[in-house]
Amino acid sequence: MTRRLLLTFVASTTLVMLGFLVPLWITVGNLVEAQAQREAVITVQPLVNQLPLVAPDQVDRIVTRAQGASPGLITVYLPDGRVLGEPVPAGDSVALARRGLTFFRTEGDSQVLYAAATGTDPSAPVAVVRYALPEGQTEQGVLTARLVLAGLGLLLFVVAAFVTWQLARSFLVPIRALAETADRLSAGDLSARVEPDGPPEIRDVGTALNRLADRIDELLRDEREDVADLAHRLRTPVTALALDADSLADADERARVAADVERLNRMVDEVIHEARRPVREGVRASCDAVAVVRGRAEFWRVLAEDQARALTVSLPPGPRMVRCDDVDLSEALDALINNVFHHTEEGAALAVTMTAEGVGTLLVVEDGGAGLPETAVVARGASTAGSTGLGLDIARRTAERSGGYLETDVSARLGGAAVTMHLGPPG
Image (cartoon, rainbow, N blue to C red; front, side):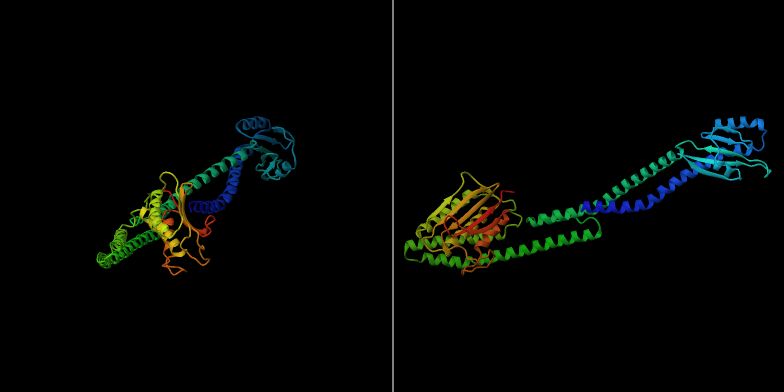
């Protein structure tokens, strides 16, 4: 935007300055030339006035004195044919001047003045004074004046550019502040606010952005409280399930159901905690993906062995930090593995692989089932197999929050579906 403003300024200012400077450029040349001609007339006029009044024997002395005081070259053509001063042959201009005319002519590189020295007697012979202005005097004066004019134009251009830049800053700085605040809001920092500044229109935008941020913050708080309340209401049926589990006669069955109820209870606690966690918390969250994947793979290995599934886990040595919370990554991986158990036949192989991708990390879940249908979509609540449709969407949102994305393909190793989470490095 700054570049466009400067280009607009340069174009408009150039047009305006050309509209003024070009005529002024021409006028200055004419004025300087006219000034030089006036000075030539003033220089020659005393000699023209004296010639008809002095005796012939004093003409040489008067011409010599005038030549010594003049910067130009003086030539006097007397009526008797003599030529005094600078020896320049008489031409048509001298004959024209004898008719009583005074005029300028350009001869070579100089301006030349011809003036008739007429007396009180119109019938008396006329002497003619030729005055050649110093060579280059007019051009030098015009050049100097035009250089001054060009310098003045350049100075005005620089001043106008500075004023334009300051005016541009007065609304570019507030616009940048708006953009920075919007970026912070989009990154999850709902405390970001802008200080309204600049022209009235930009201040109005800043005020509207602050109101929007307040409204989003309010809506999210209300939504999270609703989720927390809903999760809290689940405690009653969970407690009832725990009591029912205690009443089971079979000890093994009682222990298994009690473990499931305890896990459900922990999940309810996590939902309440997550719902009441500030939105901006965890914007820069990070975890060791290797530790999380290893732990969840061991959890699912028991069920895989029970269904005769070959579970292969390939992890890089050492920790691998990614930009997401360990709970979020666990839920995403659980959703993908649960999809495999839910949508493939028992005995279908399962592989979880983690590799480095530059500064990021690839987490791939593959299976030996029939693969994803062509109509499969990665959208919240959308499913073509009778499930809730949340599995792939949970993984997608986790990958995107980490700065990456989710990708689905066919597994080249197992022949079924391959779901890849591209996870970004800690921010």
